[in-house]
Length: 344
Image 1 (cartoon, rainbow, N blue to C red):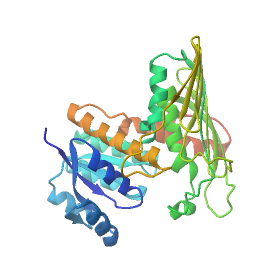
Image 2: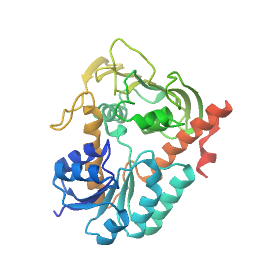
Image 3: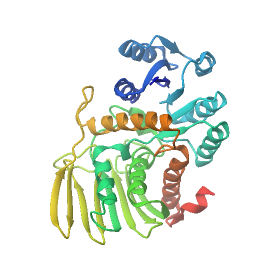
Image 4: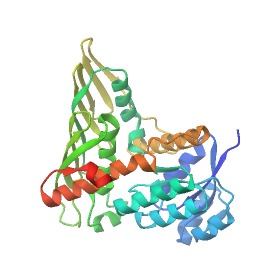
């Protein structure tokens, strides 16, 4: 089968992982790259052997010669680039956070829908091997119907050394990390009716919040807690693991540190190692996230081939993005927020 040809826009911190993953993905190849920084453009171009290099996205699209675009810029560029892609009838992957505002995100989804082109948000956490293992356990009815859950990402890892701009953001942990954890909660327990959130800034050297605790009421009746922190000092650093606890009508499930999955039901308890694969270009402890980048990009190609909607399509991600916006609203007003109202 003919490979889908892609172009990458944005050659920054995380895009290198995407380029490595594209080299491993079956059925796709990156044929052009674009970045306003000539140094970054040349570094990525030389590292991955990409000859077509552009400093301007308009010029990239004008020349064409690709089937999809992978937008890996900062959030400020997402809406204009997605809409540019829609005007050129080119399928688009967009890095998270999807947009600056929910109204922007809705406009981006509409632009691609009206143009008849696929739009997927690069929300890779649900594609991590341990998260997929939890989803499969539920699909296999290992614990019956879940009625309570906890999705926890607590760490003291210094994320600011590699991404110093995070310390300057007015909104930090929910927008940068909580968005992933909220998406996992939706993926595992279904869509959410209401959310109640509390936030705190512990690190005095940053502008935004570095701790958040959120209570979710899911549409199917389950209740879950999503808690995220970059101010938690532990004897064993769990970064970048998401830990999960689920109680169901027929048993319980625990995804513990070290990628250990424990399932308890009428048959007893069993423990399974659900560690991610260490890809040839990956490095610990990032390998969990790096493997999920490959997994979501392979999913992108498979669904393009089938002409089917993607798991983290733009329409689906609106529901996760609404949770982020609602969490900030709830924390500011100290009350629960109805998600359905935000999505209208």
